[in-house]
Image 1: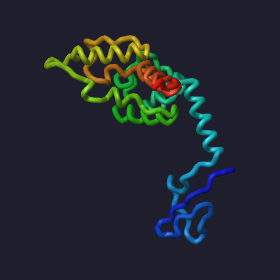
Image 2: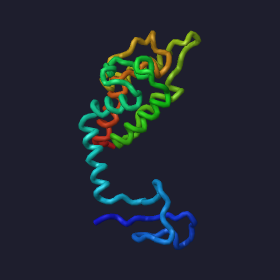
Image 3: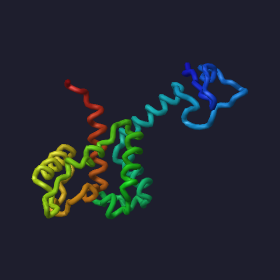
Image 4: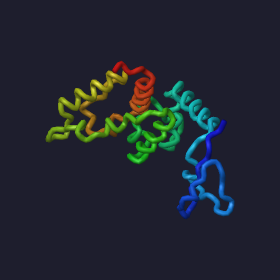
Length: 181
């Protein structure tokens, strides 16, 4: 059984939203509002794609990073920095975040890493002990080797391929672990 399709026509009125039928005199506009409901087949395909991506987070993240950073697979060393080594920009990290959210059906963990209150520095630009402790706790939780804190000033400095991959591995793992609350 497939879901009914809801069409939205360009001139709204009580009769322009038709469930389960189309108005041939007034074609529906192209775009995402053509149909609101997905067929069961589409839903099953999406579920299968998410399951496949979650089964191989490393491979999926590698493919996404190559696509977003427009780099060669050979450049994807685990220690390669997304910004410094792969020449990506902030907008590319946002694109990667959106693509990974879609691929894994998780909320991007990058937003927590980008909160300004988490990144405190002293007058000389060094990370505060609180920030260092927070990064240490997060890296330990994800199983990522700690960075050289003397070299870290902004989030871009820790965005290695390994860090980004582990971040989404942790997000996927957390969605698969039943809540104890």
